[in-house]
Length: 264
Ligand SMILES: O=C(O)CCC(=O)C(=O)O
Image (cartoon, rainbow, N blue to C red):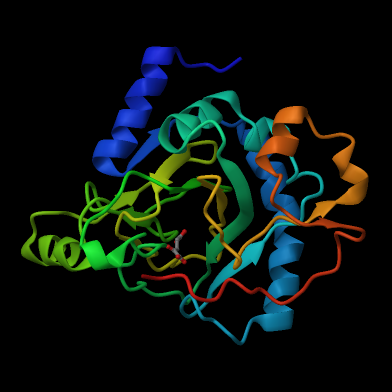
């Protein structure tokens, strides 16, 4: 049972359709975010040791896939009733979940180029379509001006990148820093123009990304490796959401990150 009424859910859906994103304030318990942050720290350290030299998201900024094990394989997060109601309202009841990962700027990170996370579906038409790919983002720590807030624009998800950039350059559209608290959840159309900004502190600023898509969208660059042993414990709804992901015998085997091309 979610916390929001049907009309409130519809208003979040409208927010994403019109602005490109909405925020559900204080949605996840702070203690849960702290537990995730603690469990994430060694994963980040291991990632930096293995492939830290790549820095393809910019200096001192890392994309790390989370393993589908506790505390990250949490149905209270990826099956949250309110988040799913908004997701379903935007990309259909048969949506799939195919990404569980993090973006983390560290001290030394810089402004990213403004970008979208997906190209248009039909570039030859010069027109955008209704939403097909969503990111559900939540930070694991409070985000301050100094900790490199995610900056986002309103209303650029349904226009071309060129037009969006023109509006930003002319000042008609503003890049807004989102000072999200640990527990706040953003649901966004990945076509909205945005960028990461410099983290000027010693505290890593992990932002979790759950990627939900229309059922027909193939995203070979991301996946959630489901441990075979976990299958039996998944709800029917979770099995449906996760149905296109690989089932693996050993979840802990870490391959190199394959999601390298991320900006459009
Ligand atoms: O700073 C962030 O959390 C987002 C960074 C980002 O947009 C990206 O790496 O694609």
